[in-house]
Length: 499
Image (cartoon, rainbow, N blue to C red; front, side):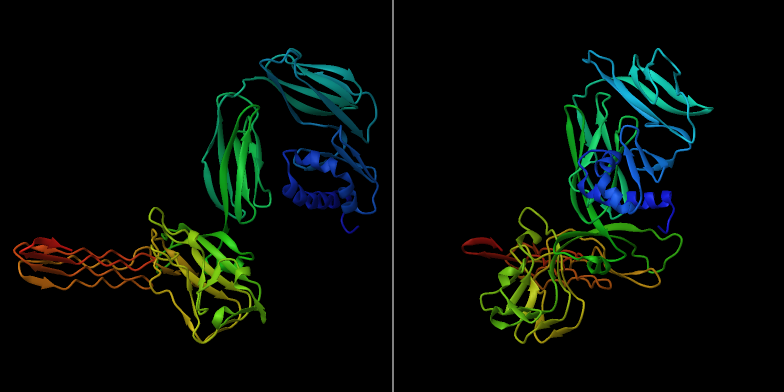
């Protein structure tokens, strides 16, 4: 082996940790390690390996190491204990006091092991030799020490009476974090139980309980996706939803990292400053995207003929890509991406082609639309060349959505190319008096890359009462402003009329 015994063991344990994170079912890593000792032996290769689960030790070619709950190893020189800290929990209805076994391991020394409790009214020791039983007699803290030939090792023992919880809550209930970002969940209970934590998918996020009773859940984002984090006591359960977003320097860089289709979240920390200084303020923006991923080249032809890597493919086989009845207009996205009467649009739709993209003559590529506009945007991301003999069109597909700064690209000087949250202001309303008319006022021009404001409506009065048109709305990053309503006042023999 190129590395020494201790270094090789650390490498082998690290390899098993990756498997542990994928398969974790609530057990500690140390328990997982000893349960998979054959896999560890394979990682260590041609070495003599002995496992002692009771003493929590691994011996390699005669060299002994103690293993803590997290898989950290310590070379034993003299004497070591199977645990350095033990909690003895007694529930209110327990008839027997809490107990645990404690093991001592001797290396490079021999002789009788002497055991001692720093407070025998709190912790009693039974037995002798390399294994004893400790019993918690009353609430408190005591140190159990094992000694031999002038060497000693100790274990802190905490004895406490646990109050059963009848309530358990997690704060916050929803979290969005980036990959490799760490955040915390706080669990509150009305008892003093140990709180256990688990995640629905260790590939996306892992969780570790910390704090006196495990009341802090430390979460680490691993891969983009959604998970449920669960906290448990004996009778109570609470959950929190965690979304792990792709962390990228810009929206386009985030799309570049995406390797699978479907709904994704991209987190960008950007600024609208046009010069980066020490005073520059950054703000996190999270972009929801629905990605149609083509693993290769894509050709969009007339009559609904689609080819992927030169091979004809049924449009129904490509999720969230549809074609019109005349076979000439291809739409990206689905109805869940766009707004409704009661909800804003959810996503920007992305067609990501990992090859060449060809749009044939008379063919239009666009985004899905509905009564309330389209998605938050359409991005065509092609890794190779684009041949556009047709049309890429987003006319009349502005989204019903709240605006946000869309940081498309980060420049070399640290500034961003972005679409601003708010575009141009809408045109002011116009008023007209009896027997007159006025045209509406056009919306204001947008800032760079911004959308324009909507024009105000016109007005006409054919009677004795003044009239006022509707005001145009401001543009947002996802839509130009809508036009204001026109008004007609007509007082004739049939009475007054407005429209």
